[in-house]
Image (cartoon, rainbow, N blue to C red):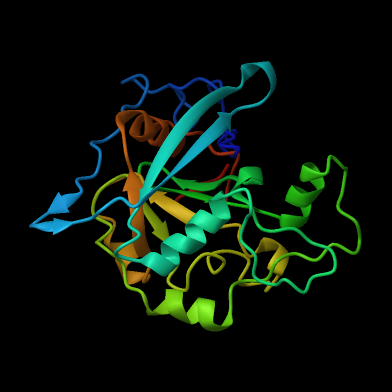
Length: 255
């Protein structure tokens, strides 16, 4: 999975984007390499958030000979939100997420060909598959996918309803929580244009700061958390990465 870093759009005298001390504004941090926040607690006010499944993401940060790797270990709350966790496991597994078995030519949606797509510094980072068509082409080592290729649609029917009926297991109140859209995976990106190819461009987010009540107001759902200090340190690195492009009117950037 790619966690590529880029350049702050329009910056001047920018630091090397592959330098871990290079901040999102394109300047070196005075405090040096960012340190991860504390690992989320699994017992709060006698409420236990039991880890039932573990997903490990190995990310490539940068490109070519300058690339480095980072690992994020995610623990999922399968007892609190089983249907949402099932979607997450399918997305991260080798078999992938399948929404239609009637496609003549296509492939399941797999996070392995995905990337970190958007970052709000010190707040949240966004992960997904920007284009299923491009991901499929890479998987078969072609410049582009066949014209007949059909991307997977967003989940619908009974599966959509089961995920929709689940509520967030806990508030978005600390760093290191795994969050999915209100309607579930597949409903966080590409909605404006309505393209299935971009449906999973914002599959899930990870909180990088505390007390993100706006995520609660958006109806997003916490389905898990990061498990160790290495994961929290990798998150801090990603959440402080320089932007490749920042969009007008937004307080985050494309990566």
